[in-house]
Image (cartoon, rainbow, N blue to C red; front, side, top):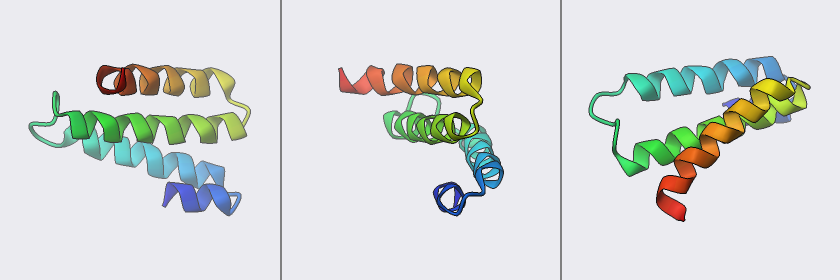
Length: 77
């Protein structure tokens, strides 16, 4: 949904969707060290960062991208 909202030029709705998805993912039980869940969180952070970039909220975008790189790097280096 977040990607669709962003494509429809509703970036604030996209932020809400990605933040909710991250919140739900983090609340899931037993996923702290699971590589699939960490990769999902990395993609969600990457997408959220892209939306923040679109909104010219560069500090938030950079923060999201740093977290995404850290999570991706655990499994793809």
